[in-house]
Length: 320
Image (tube, rainbow, N blue to C red):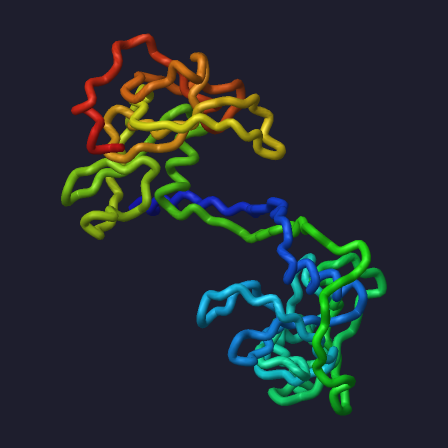
C-alpha cells in the first residue's frame, strides 16, 4: 500500500496596503485641528442644540450646513470601551491600552481615542478621563496623545468660540496603512504556482461548466466546489479597458498606459492586465493579445497584440 500524496502547501505571505490620503479642510475641520494644536477642543452646535465632538460640517439630521463652534473641556466620561492587549505598529500607544469612546464635558457625542490604563480592570464605563496632549503638536488628531484617568470635575464650561487661530491648518495628509498575513487559499495557490511556470490555470464548475480564471474554489453562480483544473490561453481578447493618466507611487510605468479586462481563450471570466507593445490610443475592444513574461517573472509583465484580426463582438460580449 502506498501513502497518499500530501496536498500542496497553501501560500501565505505578509501584505501591506499603504497610501497617503491628502485632503483640504473646510472652516470647521480647519478650526478643530488647529485648535488641537493650541490645546483647545472645539465642537460644533447643531440647530437642535446638540454639541458634536469631533465636529461635522453638516447637520446629520437636517443636512444643513453648521458653523457655530463651541469650546468644550478636555475632560470627559467613558461611554464604552474595548481593551487592546496587543497594540499594532503606528497605534497611539505601544503598550496595552483601551480604545474608548469619551464624551467630553460640554459635548453630546463621543470621540474615539486611546485610553492609557494599567489594565482592563482599571477601565469602566462612566470613568472620568482627561486629554493627555502630545509634546509636539502639528494640527492633527494625534495632538491628543491619548486619554488618561482623571478624578475631578469639568475643567471649564462650554463656551462659544470664533474658530480663529493664527496660521490655521488648511489641509492634512493622513497615511493609511493595513498590514496583515494573506492566504489566497487552495485554488488561487495552484493558480499562482502555475503562473510561475508561465501557465494560466483556472477551474471548471462541474454544474454549469464555466471556467473561472483566476479560480475561486467555488462557482459563484452555482455555489458548488470547483476542483477540475483547466489550462486556458495563453492568448485572449480585450473586452474593455481604461487609459491611466495618473502615475501611481512606486510604480515604474510611464503614463499614459492601458489597463484592460482580458478574456483568455477558454475562460468564462475576464482578468486584469496591462496592455503594452501598442500605442495607448490604438487599444480597442476585441483586440487579440498574448502575455509577455520577463526573465524570472512569476506572472505576466503585460499583454501585447498577437497580430490576429480583432475578435467579433459576439464572441466576448458576455464577458464585458
